[in-house]
Length: 76
Image (cartoon, rainbow, N blue to C red; front, side, top):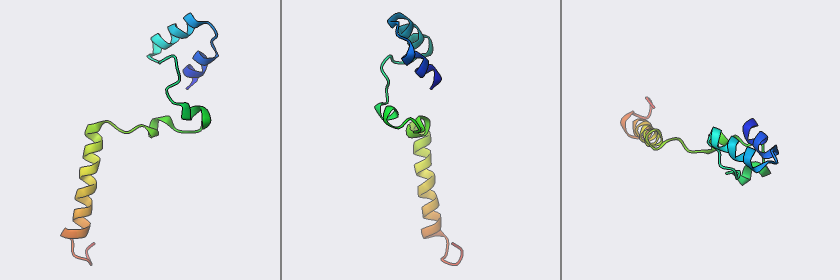
């Protein structure tokens, strides 16, 4: 966040390009929503990688199956 702010405060185009290249940023801000609401957590807004997302879905299905179908009502 601080690097993005530093880059946005820089008025020299070459300096902006150097900062963007050095740290792997795009010169334009990628999230306009962040301008509207700077308190948003941009890390948690992004989905996890597909493998972990798929595993999370499978784990949720297994848990629901365990509670709804495998265990008896008193055990659940």
